[in-house]
Image 1 (cartoon, one colour):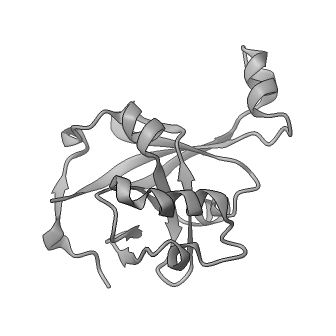
Image 2: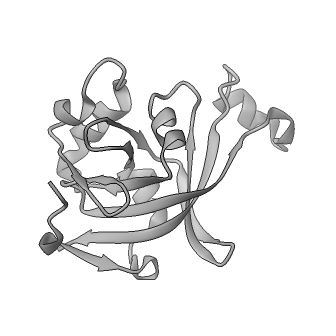
Length: 173
């Protein structure tokens, strides 16, 4: 199934009129990568949006042990999916279970649709399609505030950073 475009408006990244701090920190998102038949998602609340290299970009962070990391690494595109509050339990499930053990999409009651370059969740109210531009790993020696390392990386499982061009934005309604 292809995303029902009659339910969505295609908007420019510059037309996203929501508080991005609230979107990420309070509402969360599901990072989704792969193909309709084989994909994985993960809940994320760390990330951001901005302008880099004269392009609208998103940046996301994924720890090395996350199953979703392989899907994001193996694909040129991924999506950031934002949901209405009624989907909070689905986001909790996708953040607490591993796609190695269960089909998180099915267990969360979600369904996947094809976009032009990748996939997205049909139930998302806002979908941001991203094309990877840059990858790097956090390095402990580069932290100026060593308290961040102590607090957030006691296992030395430093995030991988992805910077991606925002190639499309779909908004429901």
